[in-house]
Each structure stands twice: as structure tokens, then as C-alpha cells.
Length: 447
Image (tube, rainbow, N blue to C red; front, side, top):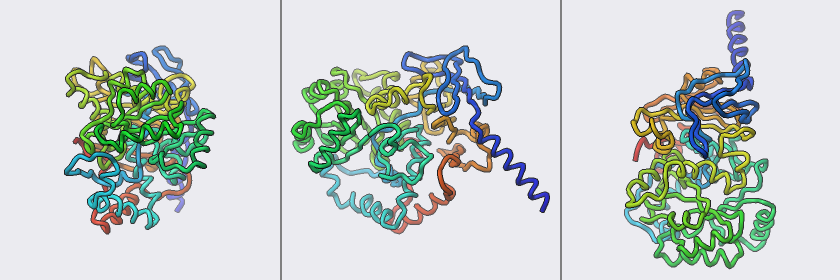
């Protein structure tokens, strides 16, 4: 008995020591809006970035990691429907005119809508949310949109549309259906430096319904600063010009657009009008598993064009600094800069000739298994097992399989007691089987 107590006290001591918020010094190739810093140091103290550069004074008690990797800001996902990401890919056999078309299809209702409703009614919303947030983190996202109104899993990803400490960020899937009372409330929030992300013009450029939505938006006086349009596939060059005049942003979701409508937003027109544009995965059924995969898809799409629309540096900005700008958080997130919140992603530097010369190429072509470390609010939450054990005792880590690579995740920062993630997986998979489905993997491991 005394031996067991002694062992317990040793483990407790180790856990307490590792849980103390010591300074963290990450050494590797640091990506910034201006370029990259080879063999740079990123110093994190008390949840914030304390210093970035090549000649940084590191405190004696700091945890020092020579990553030999690429260090960049945590990715910011401004367009997702997280609770739907438990579903495997839906492969429609046709292209649709607008979202109103496929939402009425019996196959959509059978494969997605009915099972989703069934699990929610069974009281599994929190488990679904938990799975989705883990999925987002394993794709490099540190901030997400599209969670439950009152997220159950405080301590995982940043839930931007629920965290009032970061400002008022509203997310509306059907903005044209808002009541006049709701519309007045939204306009008051926008006038107080709030943000509104809305789905609009989601459909083929030739679909009259999708195109009409832009006119309806203007009629409701919602073409105003603080607003960002999600999808925008049916928008014309004149529409983008009007958006630019009103300082309205764009959130681009290429894979889901191409899967459902065979087309995507006119980025050339958006960039020509200097519209701040972010990229986001939409949802797993027709989009990407997460932001890292969506970056990879977008980079591949861009390479297939007769003339490229963007370079790798701009594409990475669309997942970091640009989304931060759209929700007025560009002085707190999206850049590795002194004083900013310490949301950090570390990627393995692949042994591909092109990536050795261009770390931005390596970042935008990275795979989920290339993630070495994810830090949110200065705390290590996910990454390679040996790296995670520098911050969290192995007894507090859970093992995940990502495309044949072992990763570790920590739930130590969550409030309240939680079951193991493997229990969550098993519970959801069992529930889905009653609806003829099975739980989607955290990563598809390729298209």
C-alpha cells in the first residue's frame, strides 16, 4: 500500500511540474507575413508571444524545442458546420444549382439530415462537438466557427462565435431569413465593431436564386463593414466591386463548391477589388476534413489553372492573418508577433526539393500527419508523442492514429471531467450504426 502511495505521489509531482506554465522556446523556420526566419526562435510566456527572431534571450526555466520544422500561426477556420463532421464523405452523382436544391434531395436527408437529427435528439450533441473540435485541431486549426451555441468542450479549440472575450462574432447560415428584431440586433453589433459571417450566393453562377440573394442582402442594408460573405459562387464582378466599396470580406470554400456546384467563387475579381479573402473547409461531407487539407486542395486547384490566381504565401495568409482581419482580431491572432495570443502550429519540414527552398510551399502542401505540434493559448494540446511529453505527462495523453502516424492529444485544459476520446469515438460510431452510417475518420489520408 505504501509503495502504491509512493508511486502515486511521484506521478502527481511529475504531472504538477509539467503542468506549470513554463516559458516555451520553439526553434525552427518561422513564417511571417514578410517572409521566413531560418533558425528563428519563438518565445511564449503566459499564453502570449513574448519574442520572435534570431537573437532571443531565453529564460533559464524555459522548455526549449529544436523542432527542425516550420513554425506558423495556428490556422483560423471561419466557415464550418462542426457537428456534421462526424459523417463520411457524401459524393453526389450530380451538380446542383444552389444549396436549396441538394437540401431537398432524399439522398441528402437519408445519409446526413436524418442521422444528424437522430444523434442530436439522443443527447449526443456534446460528443459530436468534441469529436469535431479534435478533428479541427488535427488539421492545424486553433480557432473555429460553427460550433454549438453553448460549446460543451471549453478548453479545446477557440470557439470564436461563442467566446465574447474576443468580441462579438456572429455566424448566420440563412441571413435572409432573419426577423426584423434579429436584424436590428445584428446591425447594432456591427456598429459596435462586431462581425457577421453569412452564407450567400451559394450555387452555380448561372443559378438565378443564388444570384438574387446579393440583391436581397443589399435591400436589407447588410452590405456594410464587418460583414463577410461565405461561398459567393454566384457573385459577379459588379457584385465584388460593390463589396469592395462597402469593405465587405469573402470566405472561400473551394472543395465543397466544386463538389456541389462544379464551380467556385471568382477569386480573380475578388483580388482585383482588393477584397480581404479567407479560406475555410465548410464541412467534411463535401469539403475537406479541415483547414490543412483545404489548403492542400486549393494549392492543387491553383496549379491546374492556366494562370495561377495566388502564390503560396498569399494562400497561407488566407488561413491566418486574413480571417483574423475579417473578425477584427488581427491585433491578437493570425500572426506570430510579440504580444499576440500564442496559437501556434508546427509542421514537419518535408524532404521535398521544392519545400527546402520555399517553406510556404511546404506549409500549403502539408498533410495531416506532418503536424508536429499545436499550441492554443500557450498550451500544447496536440502533436507528436515525444514532443507532447515535453509539456504533458504521458498518463494525461491519449493516442490518436492519423494516417498510420501516432499522435497524442491532451484534454488537460478542458473544464470538468471528460471521458476518454476513444470512448467518445466508440459511442458515436455505435449510435451512427443505428442509422446505417459509421463514424468518419479524423483524416481521409488523401482525396
